[in-house]
Image 1 (cartoon, helix red, strand yellow):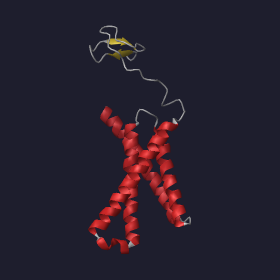
Image 2 (cartoon, helix red, strand yellow):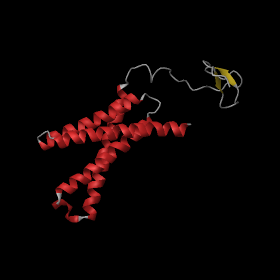
Image 3 (cartoon, rainbow, N blue to C red):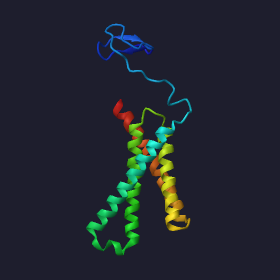
Image 4 (cartoon, rainbow, N blue to C red):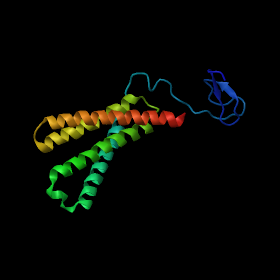
Length: 167
C-alpha cells in the first residue's frame, strides 16, 4: 500500500490522497483537517469541555464516596477528618477518570487541550478549597500537586487507551 493513497472503505481500492470521492465507486471520503493538533494553537473549546467533564466527575465521585461512607458508617458525621479523607479520595478518583474520559473522547485533538482543561479544573478546585478554609496551607499545596499528577496520569491513560483501541 502506498502512503500517498487513500483506501476506500466501500470497494477497498486506492484513490489519490487529496481525493474527496473514490475514483472507482464514488464513495465520499471523510474530510480531515490537517494540522489541527500540531499547529501549536490551543482550541479553548476543548479546554472548557475538559474542564467541565473533569469538574463534574470530581463532584460526582466525591459525593458518591462521601455518601457511601455515611451510609455504611452512620456515625461518620462525627468523624469529619475521615469524611474529608474519603471525599478527597473520591475527588482524586473523579479527577483521574474525568481526565481519562476527556482524553479518550478528544484523542483526535492535541493532548495540550485536555491537559490544560484538567489542570485548570484542579487549580479551580484548590482555589475553592482556599476560600472555603479561609487559609492557604501546605496541605492545599500538596493536594494541588497530587491532583495535578493524577490529572496528567488520567490524560495520558485516556490518550494511550484511545491509541491502543484504535489500532
